[in-house]
Length: 130
Image (cartoon, rainbow, N blue to C red; front, side):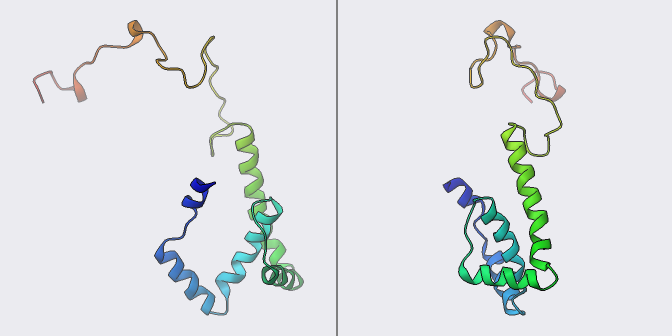
């Protein structure tokens, strides 16, 4: 969980622009509310009472909150499906290579010493020291 929190921490510039966006009619705050609602429905957080109130206000206003939430929830469902299948993000349609008999992920060395090639010249240069 701490690794996740580290990756989503805002930089100083992001914090500055968020505050500036909130000052201008609360645009950044109102854009955040539907995303946080999608995360809450996925079990990844909770809305405050103020966010819940503003989400309902956005939904009453021609469904703006709901329609802003739908693409975020779709992205979350795709990420969950890809991670459940054990696929790498963006590579869900690429089949995984079959495992070798007796091989377990994390085994090292993967091959015997006879299968490892001897070091050769680097970058196509002769072995003159360069």
